[in-house]
Image (cartoon, rainbow, N blue to C red):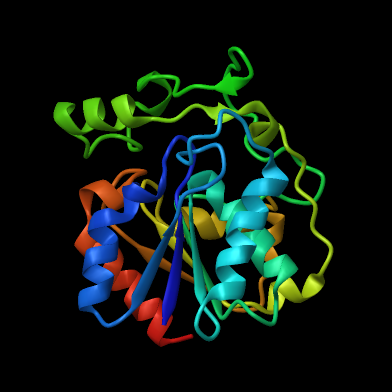
Length: 228
């Protein structure tokens, strides 16, 4: 199966290198996506352009692909299911949750000169980054690509309720499946609460398992794809 890999804020397609290698060995075709404004050399981009890049990958996939979103890009994966509910076989969401219609995409951190740079490790102290050593932290921070303002502040637009029919697996890194279920029950994750086919799986990692647990993450994704 084609497995489309969409990394979160500040990351380009190379974030998936180790996961992609492992997925190939497991018999799948990984397709890491470098988003407009996040690694393609463009100085700016919009949320609509990032969505279009993901949809282009969906449309050119062999058969019905599984779309994987990490962190904020869980919303990009969700938008793909909304726009292509008949084409997307499954979603895998890693360490993040889809935003609802009308919400800002990722207006989380301070903007400078039209972009949202990586804010340093302060906001991610604790479970998010506990499994990253100093070398990994330096590597991630030095490679981080500032996110264009029009992406971070873009408005999420959802329109097709058939997105709730697309099977979803939520990969839980810095939080547990039990915590995610509690958030859903409390009404904090309204989009996931309406998903008709939702599985939750645990991975013992921080927020970036593609760097710290790539082989295990690939195995979980391959298992999800085989069930699609």
